[in-house]
Length: 229
Image (cartoon, rainbow, N blue to C red; front, side, top):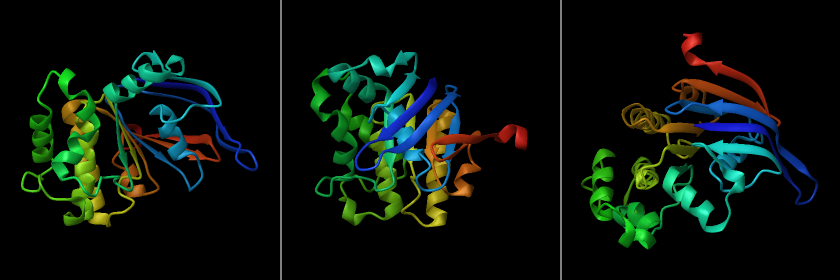
């Protein structure tokens, strides 16, 4: 599903910073992978590059058989919209839109060309998230855990093959955070979605099939949880 080859990212604002340094890895379709490491180790950078939110300085990324480095403009935007879902630590919900409207938002510009009813799918996803009675609540009327569930539903609205979650439990207490990870695990198992979670939380990492440990932009260890067990 995902292959990176000698992936390097150097930020040149001020003194050059090598955020990723020659990262090569493979992630199979349907895997649940945790990317761990201290702050500044390159976790978010790796997810942003896989998700095509940023471009590498050098190296190659293949996602679902497509060399994403060859994509530009509308082709890149279409690829991202059709195959990748994003969940962020800060939720990034629009405060003036309801939960239902926030979930629909990514596909509203393409509504006429969809082969399904957008509002119907958004309602179904919120029902799966346990938010069927919160459809018309604004983000400010929801708890942190509920807001993250809305954000997950929004990430699933395009039926992605890959779900990227960057510190999805960072703003939640430990109990609610693990409920969110259990939900992601359930989606991974039942829908076959490839899930990559960046986290500094060991409890979250232990839920993954594999743990990829980063330090100073390099892979320092890969732990196969099945072998460890």
